[in-house]
Image 1 (cartoon, rainbow, N blue to C red):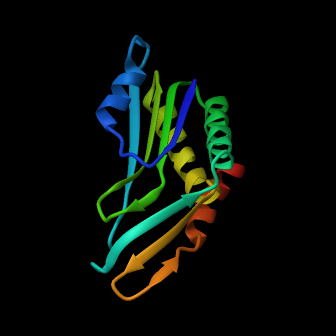
Image 2: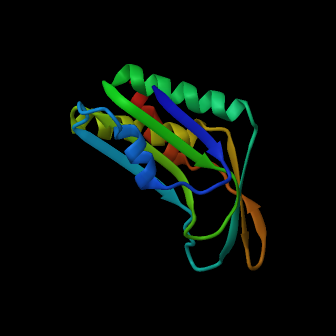
Length: 149
């Protein structure tokens, strides 16, 4: 049921929602999350996302399948981009559908917590003055822990 894409191309949120809805009149809730490249301090020129093909898709599928076992989802779509992106560009899209909003919201939240912490992507930021790899944040690990209880 889950559909996963790891791609360099941008995505069309409306088209992705329409594809999930097509022919499914049981859907009562659609939750989306779109992550974009942010430029805190107006110094970021680009962010480069690298991944290990095969391993990345396998992990994203595993995360999505786990969400589908925890909540009664009617659809699940995850798109994560890679390559060099500029401030304002889309990075990630998560769409969950269910008969009721609670399941759709919780599943989307779960997916994003796992994507932020466990998805095998490496981020490099280039500013006007330097280039640096972005480390994982402690708050992302704390957010992930709530799902392990």
